[in-house]
Length: 152
Length: 161
Image (cartoon, rainbow over all chains, first blue to last red):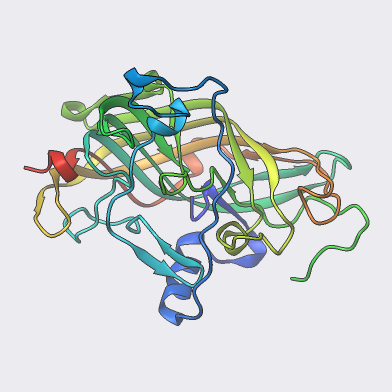
């Protein structure tokens, strides 16, 4: 969870480092580029049709595009700005061709982690960069859509 | 931290939840219901309340962002519930950034979060070795520490004016 560099990222207290701090340190240190993780996404089983511009998977055709800006870290370059004042400048949105409202939160939080198999518990401190974007956007199909997205 | 042994591993290690990267290259974002967002710019308040958001538990950020997830693989996870609230006014700013093609009005403020997340127990090949299940329940929202927070009305890309 941004507790990831979003609760996005949740980090154990013992590591004593936040996702944001880690990413920034890594970025400063430089290092070899990695491959961008491309993870499986949910997609509907129905095919597209002509009304949808020939899109095969509706869920994919309706996806927003990322902002052009790239932040480079040792594992590759990704389309986002680190949290910070918008006049830094740092676009808080991670999607482009977007018009709407946003919320951004770079937070530290604590809580209890439980091994659900053994019942053992531990104290956790997480760092998270979470955001939302709600409004209009031009999607992969070139059409204007409305929707909301969470950056986690 | 090396790879786990073949035996079942306790889940009380690092955890890092994210939705992955979209095929359109959207970074760590996932669609949510529009009514999960409440936004009142004139009152300097906003909230995001979501339930049952499917994500990955990549355990660490490097493991998430490296294509073969070499540390442990990745686990099935879910943000069971998440409530984020923004309030207050620390600073207001109008931005017109020609270089990055975005503009808007922003209120820098404070935020609180309350979250519960669950990682399913897993076994190969999804993960390298078997893992116990894990659940995280945050402390009360008032214990949140804000490093930076803001809400805003904005536009970018083709909507930039």
